[in-house]
Amino acid sequence: MISPAQRAEIRRLFYAEHWRIGTIASQLGLHAQTVRAALETERFNQRSLVRASPLDPYLPFVRDTLEQYPRLRATRLYEMLQARGYLGSVTTLRRLVRDLRPRPIAQAYLRLHTLAGEQAQVDWGHFGSIQVGKAQRSLSAFVMVLSWSRAIHVRFTLDQTLESFLLGHVEAFTALGGVARTLLYDNLKSAVLARQGSAIEFHPRLLELAAHYPFLPRPCAVARGNEKDQASHCSSLGLCVASLG
Image 1 (cartoon, one colour):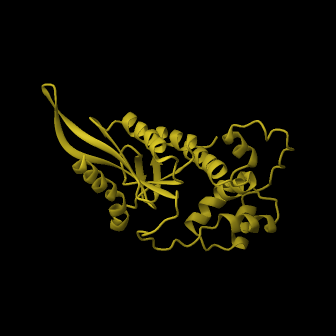
Image 2 (tube, one colour):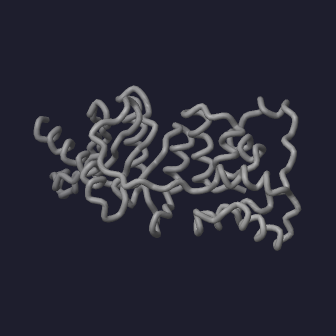
Image 3 (cartoon, rainbow, N blue to C red):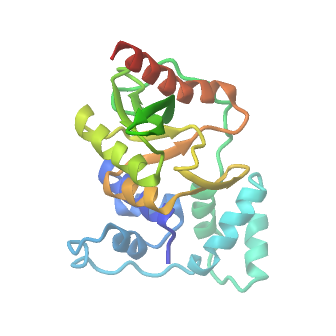
């Protein structure tokens, strides 16, 4: 059983990035049949089944060990697996380690330029309050900005509910004529349920949306001002639109 986040990632890589099933399975450390099941299509069922690998039961252990010790040699990992009952070859393990070993993460800063259709920024804007009948209601705006063209879509609402958040996405996709490959969020509660360090738990409803319109949801890094400035730029653009309207 895979998580909603893995399912959304599989569908994005297959339908948006056009990766092959074997490539997705290798990069995510999953069985090819698991990837096919996540794609929910029958057209792959005519192919012969992929033989199980002796490494399959050990994939979580290999992945977790490499995340904790990214420079650990394959031969040392092989000895650890043998002690746990692994009977396969070290050559098979080396191929897996080559695919799963974490790459050094370069320090990332705000990109001034992105490819067309590659990224959009999503945020809520706050616009004080308005009189609705005899009641004073808070006025908010869902804002999506394309990073490359700076095309903007704004949807004003009287709430910041999850339903308004998701509807804002769908209307923005229609108005902007497509879906960016990556959507950047400023750690919005509507998008991120919880995070611990680099571990992110996205809202399941957002992951359902990401699986349907295959895109990659990505939050800004905590305490990373340059990324937050990029996302908060959505709100400032929304204010400009409001003032012009």
